[in-house]
Amino acid sequence: MRDGVLFVATGAGYRELAARAAASVARVSPGLPIDLFTDAPFADPAFAEVHLLEKVWFRSRIDAMARTRFERTLHLDADVLAVADLRDVFELLDRFDVALAHDQRRNSPAANAVWRRPLPGAFPQFNGGVIAYRRTPEVLAFLAAWAEALRASGLKRDQPVLRELLWESDLRIATLPPEYNLLDKGAVARWDRFQTAPRLVHHYRFHKHFTGGRREVATLGDLLGPMAAARLPMILAADRPLAALHGAEARMPTLADRAGAFLRGLAGLPGHLARIAAFPLRRLWRRLAGGAG
Image 1 (cartoon, rainbow, N blue to C red):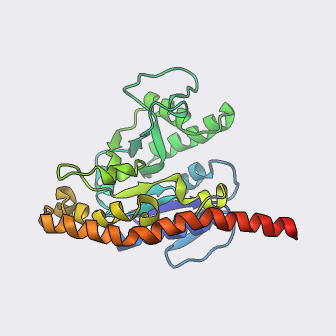
Image 2: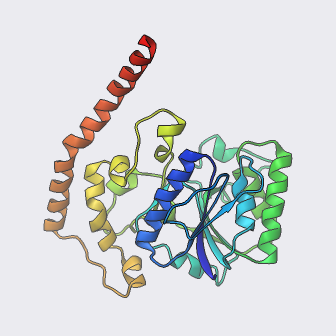
């Protein structure tokens, strides 16, 4: 197989999350085979093949990435939703060995963590949740070195090691623009006609209902809110590179488009606010019921 998408998920919650993410990829990039590496048998129509992990550790994804059956692979975290075609990422791999997106919170303590030595701020950490790569001896050797160094480092995050190893390597690195790994959900609300549309939304809130006891965020509407989510089709239609990918012309939003998106968002606002308000009450009731029992 030449091109394919790879998810790695351990535990029931992350497996279900990966299945939802894979379904979103299949909707926007039909025909791409999608594989899952996991720690227990699992079946879902979104996955072409499911592989069992041989050993599980906190970065099993590095081992799984090395076992890919695809010549060109796009590895994605489970807490993503694809909103536009991702297939042009594979074209980068005709010229580059790997393609990654920068960490978008580059002033955070985590993004400035150092493994062995400080590096220039102009070469920041890459996010490990979206990585496209070629299955070549050089890349496979890099993955093996990354896993070995991370285990030896004692660090709980893989990005500092990844950053330094990429800095020292001879791999040809392509940097993906932020719309291919959008962590800033407010960017949709701030969009104007000169900005590109998101391809992939990546956010920790997609898993916090089972890792942090918070309200479930299952859709882009849940994450972005109805006002921003209603604008998304208009934003996608106006994206010139995305339209060119499909041999079409971009359609700039008219005043009627903007008004329609505003009204659709407004219509969804009461239900969205009601769900947000109801969650603390349900959690309180569960606690009271459990205490009474």
